Length: 120
Image (cartoon, rainbow, N blue to C red):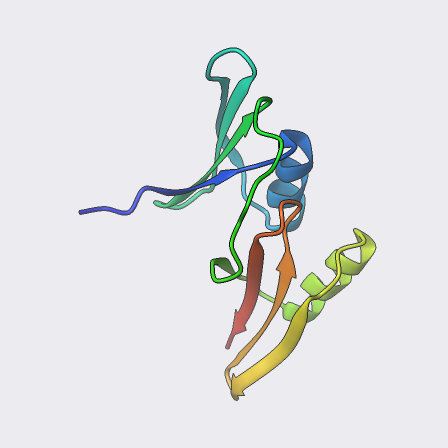
C-alpha cells in the first residue's frame, strides 16, 4: 500500500496556494477545474502530495485541533524570518525535545496546524 495524499478543503484557493507554495515550498503538480465552482490542486515534489479542494458552495471549513501536517526545513531560524515577513504568527514553540530536533507550529490560512521541524 502507498500513501498518496492528504486532502484539505480550503476557503480560498489563491490564499492557500500562496501559503503552500510560497511558505512551505511545495510546487503545484496539477491544478484543474473539477466541475462548476470547484477547483483542485495537487502540490508536492515527493511521493506524497497535498490536495487542495476549493468548492465555492462550501462557506466554512473545519480543520480540527488534533490534526497537523509536518514539514522538514533546513533552518528553523530562516523559516521564522520568512513567516514574520509574511505576517504569519508562530502559534507554539519553538520546542527542542532533544539536541538534534527543533520545531514550532503555525496555522495555515484555513486554521490547519502546520509543524516546521529542523533535524540535525
